[in-house]
Length: 423
Image (tube, rainbow, N blue to C red):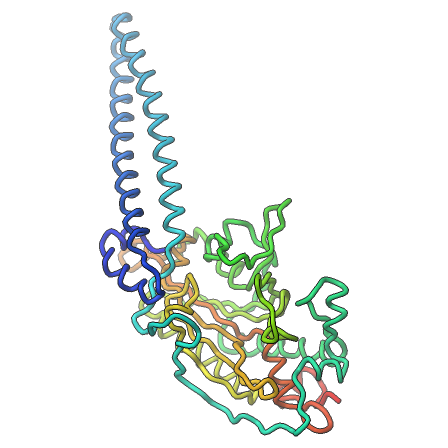
């Protein structure tokens, strides 16, 4: 959430910056400032009424002590009226504050100055590419056919149990999935991230804290009876560890990694581009989350990008890095780098990681602060990244590593899965 003071101080600058997202934020920003003015004016009146009420209460006490009962009773009637006025004023203040908060929740994060303009993924900027795209055998298959051929993923069985988008991993497919999770976690912990296990459901406050609520795209699964949400990513529970916390500068950097299943409704997703593992309702992902001092958060973002690059190098998968344009940038992010691997059998790039800096946007919602060198509370910066999401990594391994007699497992994964080939 954008800080209210920032809107007061720089409404025009924020309006111009949000144009990169192809939105006209002027009416929304103006409404915010008008409500803020109303809220502050109401607060001033309420404070005056309460001050007058307190003053009269003291006078009443003095009058009763001096025996001036009639005059004291007259003043008591006045305090009754003041209390009624203050209650109405307090109700108005709370309603205005709630309306203001709801408006602030509608404003996306301000893009970083390096974010390119653009309206869709077609306008994203490729900033890095590495790895050779393999030449496949003449009868190469996409991963959904390979999964059926080698009986390692059963999509139909998943439909029977839960519905489309819930695959069942079998035999070497399940072991390869487990190997990837362990490998990713080991890479992250070796890089200084502390591994944690977190709940797979979160409350409403946690969803609001990271900006997943309000759920504008209808992506989250909601359990109505308990008012809980299945997590769309480990970012939500991990980042909410720090909700309403005040850190010390010496605590930075905070680095966590977690494996969780992830649940997304993927409303409106259909067609060939979502076939197989390309888009699922339930999938496994290993996440990295950082809480940083504002002065070092972009250096930390670059470190995260290099970390994911190193993992993909070890897996020997061809990949590229994109800087997302304003029109494709996530609602809460200030800057995002997407990683894509090339699927040779599908002849297209598949997104497998997003690494983002949210600056103070999430921290403001979370009330995540730190004490600076002067003892003053400041908002921290939060960052997160996929390291990595498994479905499309697995799809790329199956497709790019297929040979005439099976699928060759990347060397770095062999100690984890304890086999060298599927087939």
